[in-house]
Image 1 (cartoon, rainbow, N blue to C red):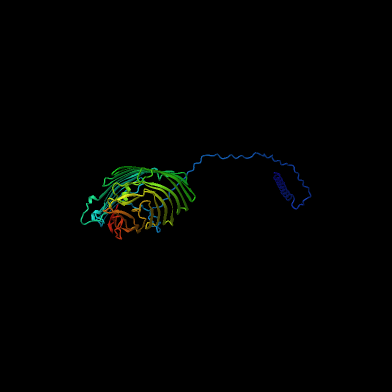
Image 2: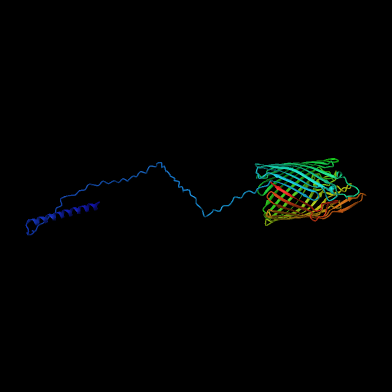
Amino acid sequence: MKNKLRLASLAIVLSVGYSYLNTAQAQTQGWNEGAKLEDAEVVVEKNRVIELPQAARNYEKFRINPPEIGDRNVRYRFTDYRLPSQDIELQMRVLTIKQDELTKLYGNYLKAGLGNYGTLYLKGYFHNKRSDVASYGANVSHVSSSRGPVDKDNSAVSQSDISLHGERYLKGLTVGGDLKYGREKHYFYGYSPSLEQEVDRDTIKQVFNRIHAEGFFHNQTSGSPFLYKTAARLRYINDNYDMSESNFAVDFRSEYGIDELSAFKVDADLSILSHNDSADVGRGFFKLNAAYERKLNALSLTLGAKIAYTGDDVNDARNFNVYPMVRLGLEPIEGNLLIYAGLGGDLQRTTLYELTKENPYLAPNVQVADVNKGLEIYGGFQANIANYVHLNGRVAYQNYRNLYFYNNSVTDSTKFDLLYDDGVTKVLNIFAEASFNYSDEIRLGLKADYNSYNTDNLEQPFHRPELMASIYGTYNFYDKILFNSELYYIGDSFGRITRPDGTTMLRQTDSIIDLNLKADYRFTNNFTVFLMANNLFGKKYERFVNYPNKSINLIGGVTYSF
């Protein structure tokens, strides 16, 4: 402010001086032209005081009020830009993957064929298609030969079956059952044909009627830590000689997973059997076993016990039995190699329903007893190689009581009685199996089961061969031609027959080498022709003494799927 006042004062002085000089010059020129300027003294007197008003000074700060916050309504405007529709020919095509369609299922088929020996071959299978609600279906079958290997129609055979089955899938529970009826007709043709005397077919005919009914439920797919399955079944059989057997059985299987490494298992079996023949016999059966399983890294351990009861009194059968259950497993390569060993025992239910399937030429009034496997020591392994080769081997030393054997009846050598070793029958069992599976095209396998019997009182393990082996294979050629083959071997065995004069003779059966082939050719998805060839070596071998089998048996036919 002081600097401004100084500049203003200096400007005023200069202005007044400049004005005075101009006035003096004008007066001089106007006085006397040519006159001389006399000496004079100019005195400038400052007699005016310039006073400025005092400036008002404001020391208060400026206040700026914040803007008021108000509602902001933002409006957006969208404009649809549409291209004019016109046909554009694209030069580039987008590659897309076609959705795989489900393979059409043919849940039903009918097969019909004819063969030598007057063979009629009929089969039918009917089933529902894909469903996550229920599964149900029916089977029918009839296979018969009007002639056989001995005395023409006196060695005929036929077998017919019809069955219904179904399952219903509920939330965490599956309920199902099946019903089956079967009829089998055989003839006791184990005699020597005579030209002088003709055998009446009705006197040697044997007919079995079988009924099987079962109902079950389980929660095996529920994911629950407690899994169970229970079933109740009724089996009934009668024959042409006034024999009948009814068996009502209930079994229960359960497993409770304590954690991912341990579980507790409890199984139970109950059977009430009634056998009516020359005498009425009731046979009770009960079995309960409990076991604890634990996995310790590569080791797995099973500890438990089994309690069993049988009501048999054949050969002084032991009614109450207790068996240990100990098993140790080692899995050095998880999922590919398992080595195991253990000891245990079991009581096995034996019924005429099953025995007559194994040997349909049983004599009337046979005595049936449950098989008591007193002690078994075993070891084995399971291996998978490159997901194609599967190996399985097992060795066991077993002790049996009331292990049954077949032998020709003393009164009629065309029929067979059941024999039991009075003491303990010791058996060395060696089992081996190898299979090769390559996709769905090639499947090969080898199976062998060797049993060395050491009987106590019986001179031979009648009609129990030591070695049974088979080699099998299938080949699928472009889903057009399917080949199946099986070459199997059954070792010889022994039977003692009684001659008409009362003398006996030990007979040895044949060693059986048999080759079976089957080929299917698919014309369309619906029609297929097939050819089956059994016993291609053409040997009439004897599995049971006095009972030769058929020679080459050929069956050809057609299959219709829908």
